[in-house]
Length: 416
Image 1 (cartoon, rainbow, N blue to C red):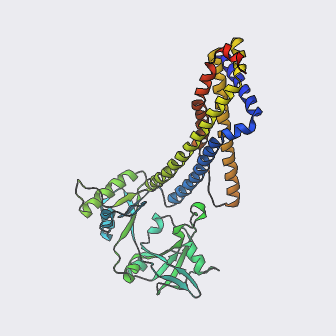
Image 2: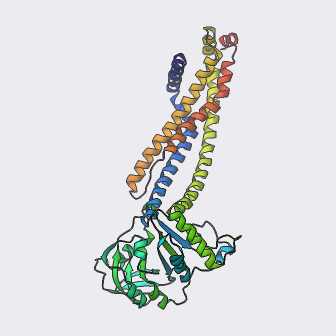
Image 3: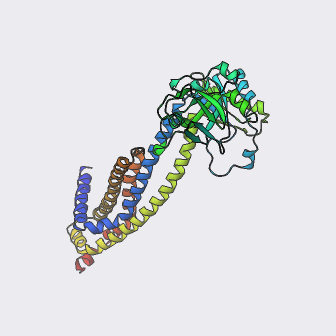
């Protein structure tokens, strides 16, 4: 065992000396591998940072929440006819969950008013397309909303349809740049609302994007229904009792299927999500992007591998006399095979290592220029860069190494 390790180390030193002798040629040989590793590592780092930001955003609302809506939470492409024809969730569905689901602690329904060609104004300041939501007071608890000024509206204000509103951080800054918005009257789509509170800013989205929660105008549910009587498409948020999230999901699904008349052999005509399912849906998108990146990197590896095979065949031809001398002095076929295989692996591993280093330096430079861009290199990207490049060297270096090991020593010594 010790002798094998010593022979491997000697082969590594021989390979390193060969690479030093032909530095520029070696770099051009592994350029494809270098680009492939650089591409995958950089993209994986950005997507990993992107995912961490999304996870933090979702978990801000609480990891014990259940969200229900009639449409998919994440949808790529146009909606199918079946999805478009789904019945809206009703207010009665929320109360059925409240009354019939023992594992649910709080359920809070909400509606969204149309913002097409609308605006919110206060004196000379305005916000285009205001996102007005009608919610119940306990929405503040379920969504973990934190007030920076004022208060949330009360049950009495909701029942009496009082036109009050709580502003998200971004719209509060837009309408009241110097602060002091509480107690002021604003116009939303031409209707007067009194500001009773402003919310703390949520964590920014990926790439420093504004969190959509900061752009909300939250008003009492029945107030919004008074101004928009035709709204009937509800979204529901429920908080499960501690340690009973799986049971709460099962109970909600059972109640809603019964409420909506879904037969036993039919799929749900609504969507139920949690923090984990929302993150899993996002992971599917990340996986699709990474699959494309792996495909592109594989092309780079193939190009690099062909280059390695070509240069190793040239190296075998150039060192034919050396191989003959080594065989004449007692070197076995496996010694020659090992020498050239190690040289190919070292060559490709060096290209992969350079790709990893350059990817890290590139991310440091980009992060310095764009501080809001989250990036974190996952461990599997580093493993893929090292193991993948070494594997390319092993695979594409096998034929040249076998050819070198198969040379006849007499013919090799005669080679000029």
